[in-house]
Image 1 (tube, helix red, strand yellow):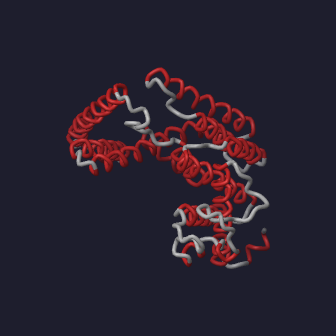
Image 2: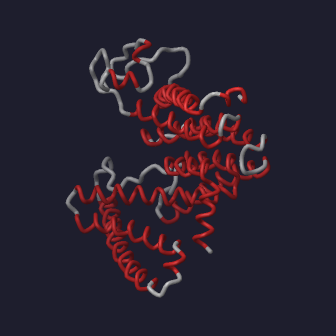
Image 3: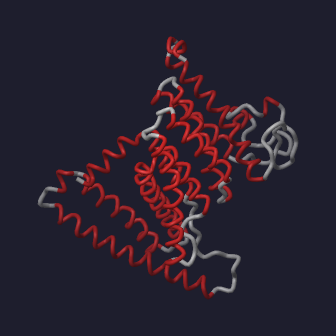
Length: 337
């Protein structure tokens, strides 16, 4: 790969982007056929609506979707936006990996990790399904990654991380059965934590999992807020927004040492904490009422409150850690001390 360093960086970035597009196109095949239980090898692509086999020029990543205006050339049904999104996301992440780590064997490992991250997050978003074999392969690759000392930990830490990741998520899931009467996290989330533990080690996993919970909370609060506002439940919708804003501002003020040490700190934080507690009371009362409604409801087919899949939050947290783990640690240490 050293011989490629003589090429202009812009050329390598464009080439990397094209590789990412092609890999993203392949990931779409793996995702959709995996969910259907079909093999992704030795068979041509076809329209998922009319099952017509596609010609080569209908399979050009990103461009085919644009030229076909998002519709099948045969049945004219709309093509899922998933196809160009996965392709573009994969291409962008591949470029970021190259710009972060250069042309190296480590970069190839990062590309493979990112590919599996996209697969796991997408299947979880589409069907709340984690295909076990994907997590096992990712865990094995994580062990190999650390055997070659590309990561932050040694192989022993990597093995302990894999075991710890699975046990931590299973313990959290068990606590959910005690307090919520059902698992707090799915079995697939435990397998994702196992693979992430193999990549990052158990110490870094103790950063990634809380960060995942924070990301999940932000996304959930945002979706719930807009949902309630859409249903014209203004008070509850604003309460979700206030919870998010208050938590963000209080966290920022504690992180900013100048404000934290000033005389105005309590004058700002105390009203925010009061607002936060008031908003939380409204939110918790609503969740309690929905739980009672669900318990008394005879319609078991219509869930009153549906939890978002946790896998994508873990994957996003892990992706950030791949590129910015040292920076995340620095922010946490500054926040604590």
